[in-house]
Length: 400
Image (cartoon, rainbow, N blue to C red; front, side, top):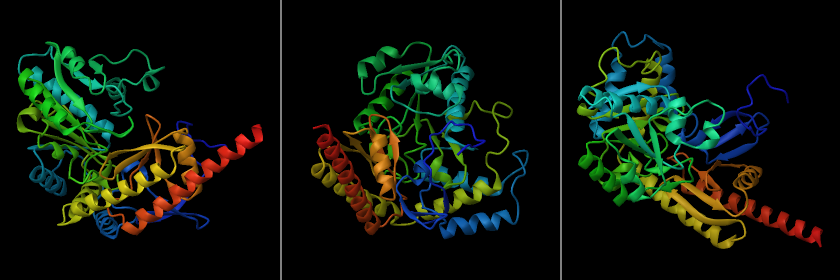
């Protein structure tokens, strides 16, 4: 079908009309179990009644006023994030890329204000993904994202994932910060071990660097803690969030300590839509649910169940699957066959997943997923693996 949309996505030929919790329904009435969650966005599934009520109530009152005026619900959401985290200050924006761009500016401005404008470089890690702006594709450093967009924005030094010696060697008198995802999402669901995050904190303290955690995909309960870095017992100076905090509504934020954020004063940074009343209403509604007693315990319980069921699939289908990846409900299967084939086979069984790097298929159900839905997902993935095996056997028989 010819579409007026730019062909920047290889879209599956499926269109959904409505959603109900962990399920999506097509116009023809077919039901799909959604373990992609809009790429880790719909943390409370589809049409969650509390989020729907918050959005519709706010929509009947006020949508947009701009940041030239106070937005009380934004101040409330910021205070709740401060109370729940290491942060003292919050800046709201619209996406993860915007948040990461702002965090990079914040780190540069921090050193500028301290009389060290030459400290502008940021160390990042191979396999990372931080967004699609010119600066954030440079931060990610992946050739497939950089090709054709002119000279790479200066100021970013990539080192191999897990190479401590290369990391130390990359730090120079021009280095301002280290930027890392506690779990690489697009890079193949590779968690950074807690001891390594603690080592990064020590290194930044030792060298006068800012530590920036990109928790766009890992945050807001996705790993069983409110934020993934909490498993390590340390905190960053700056953290970026998006995706889950809006539960499906576009919302991002930069969280920072008072010291790290002090350089961004009036006129140094801004946003037209960031922090708008609609987004703030939904963000507060998301926190109402995620911060409720017992909610994160449920995430941890479901994550353990999902990991167990996925491990069974790996044992049962070694010709299709290699291993289980990830942390919490940011989980994936590394496959033997191309991950795009595996994702397509799962979709044929009415289960949605998302491809990632290192031949991984991401499974990121809503955080309020039920045990019954996890068992159903495992059953559909089992059928997908069997279909791939049958297809391979048929091809081998045809070749002979």
